[in-house]
Structure formats: C-alpha cells, structure tokens
Length: 239
Picture 1: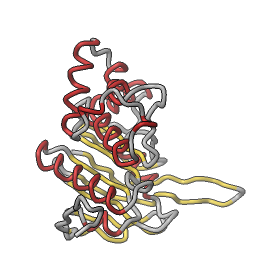
Picture 2: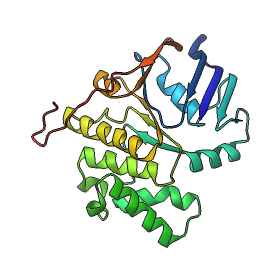
Picture 3: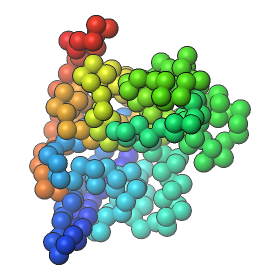
Picture 4: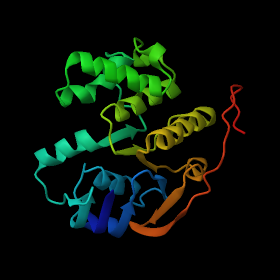
C-alpha cells in the first residue's frame, strides 16, 4: 500500500550532519495497525512525514498504491495527501473558532465538496467516533479525549486509505489514552483502513499488531506487536 526503499533524510545544523532517517526500507500493507517507536531523535516523526508526503527524502524512493511518488510536483503531492492520507496530531490542531462539525468539515472544503455533502459526511465521521451529540461544541467545550476524537473524525472524513498519527495520546491521561487507541483499533478493524502511530508510550505500542523500532535514523527492529487486550473502564482505570 505504501512503501519506502532506501530513504534517507539529512539535516545540516551548525556544521554538523544529522542523519534523521538513514537508509530505511519499509512496506506497510493495507489494513495494518502498527506503531513506530524509538527514543527522542530516532527519526520517528521524520519517517512519518515522508510516509505522509509532507516531506521528501534526500535519497531513496516512496511508493503509494504501487505508484512511485518520489519527486512529484508539490501540487500533485498535495492532492494525494488530501485524497488518500489522514493525519492525527498530538496537539489536536483544531480551530478554536469552529465547532466540532465545522472542524471535521475542513478537509472536505479543500476538496471542493458541496456544503450539504460536507455536513452529511462530517456528521457520519463524528458518529463513528461517538461524538455526533457534540457537533455544535467548540474545542474549548470539549475534554482532551473528546478533542482528539474530533481530530480522528477529521482524519477519517475524506475516507483515506492511510491514517498517520504523530504522538496522538501525548496530551492525554492513561484512561483517555486507552480510549483513543481502542477507538483507532476498532476503526481499523471495522473499516480496514491502515493506521500507523508514532508513539513513545509502551502501552500504546503494545496495543498494535506490528512495532517498528528506530534508533539513530535506522530501523532497529520490525516485529509483531502483542496487540494487548485492554479494557478502558468508566471509573477511569485501565484493566
């Protein structure tokens, strides 16, 4: 579904060469639910940005749905991102002046979808994450967990084949972390969308079916995850 071959990304800072990503080969199949882990500075976010076509490698190739997209013009990459990839970020990135429904609608505006269709699809996406009743609430009226669920709905509203999440639980407590990852895994199972999650949290990684470990820009390990069975209880405890 998405594949990178021999990709490297190098930054030059103060006369030093930083190999953020160093010769990585990786193939992610349709329907996977995986995590990308590693210490700070290991290249996790750089790799995610390359997978999401937000950044280009200095060397190597990127393939999406069997098509090489390395070196495509920025406009074509923008279209591919809007149509095929959804993003979830640590800090939610919701616009405070818009309500939940309007925030979820935003990607569809960029795609030129009509207002009635935008509203219908945004409501459907909010229903998928259990927040249809909160559609009229602004981010300031939502909890951290609810804001992240709105962000997930926004990522899903374009019907992407790939959802990339960069530390999606970094601002959440243990209970809401469990709820958000459980939601993402349920959506993966129900919709067969591919989810790749960058995380520093071992609990989140243990909830995935595949774990990619990075260190110093290189792939250190690629193996099966335990796909732990967690139950997020209403009393705020994780069992």
